[in-house]
Length: 98
Image (cartoon, rainbow, N blue to C red; front, side):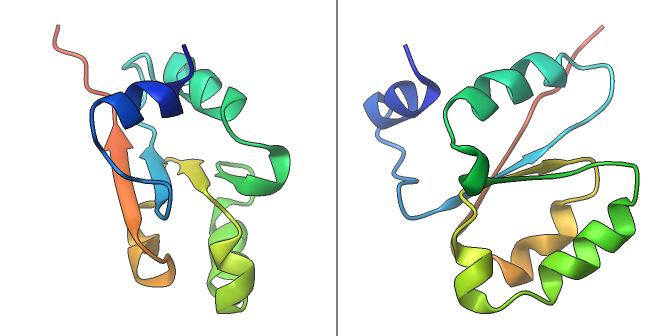
């Protein structure tokens, strides 16, 4: 079952939201990232991870509102600061308790 279908069934409405996946190291986040990537086209997602992470963030901030709105999935380690630049952000992350 696709992640979008699971979330729809949970009555979380993010069809008009941009999903922001904050990837925390060593939590199983890569697996979740792969699942999320399978549910969005390449043109709908933006991966903001090294190398050149700071440049990618600045480039995103400088896009027009319309250009930023086309992204429905943002992923990376430092994406939390982008909520002021995203229409309707919906943050998710994965934690691991050891």
